[in-house]
Each structure stands twice: as structure tokens, then as C-alpha cells.
Amino acid sequence: MLVLSRRKSQSIHIGPNIVVSVAEIRRSSVKLTIDAPRHVSIHRAELLRKINEAAAVLRPPPAATEGEFLGAGPTGGQHSS
Image (cartoon, rainbow, N blue to C red; front, side, top):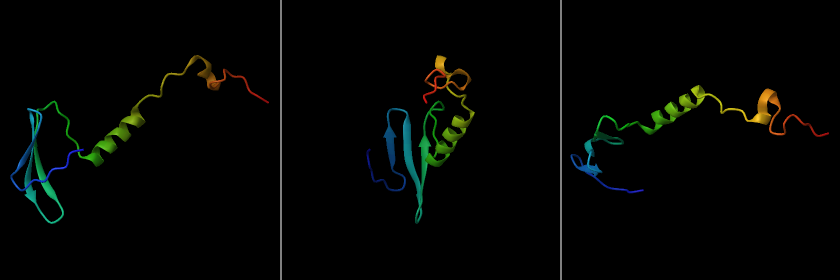
């Protein structure tokens, strides 16, 4: 992790195509501008977490293996007594 200090109107370049600039500084918040190509996804962390949680709900369960059909489970339907 890289930690940098910036003042208002200063920027950070990430690779050749992404620029993050400090637009405004208030008491407990910093307003940033991000200039990046359209194909680069940019999300706030809390929204990305919600997006990933929603995608997990919509994602189909993994395919069953041969022994797991009809609730047989990984033992192939054999029960121990």
C-alpha cells in the first residue's frame, strides 16, 4: 500500500491513463476527481461491497458432482451407523 499526502489541486497519476486530483478539502471529508478511461470501473468501497453481495445472491450455485445428486452428499448416498 502506498500512502501519499496531497493538497488541494494536487494530483496523483496511476499509470498513463488515470489521474486522481484533490478538488476540495473540508473538515472531515476530501472531494476527489478521477479522470480515467471509460472501460475502467470506479466504485466507492461500500457500494462495491453491495454490488458483490447482490451478485453472489444472483449467481447460480456450483454444479453438483456425481455423488451429490439428489442430496446424496459427498459420500455417494452411503450413511454410516
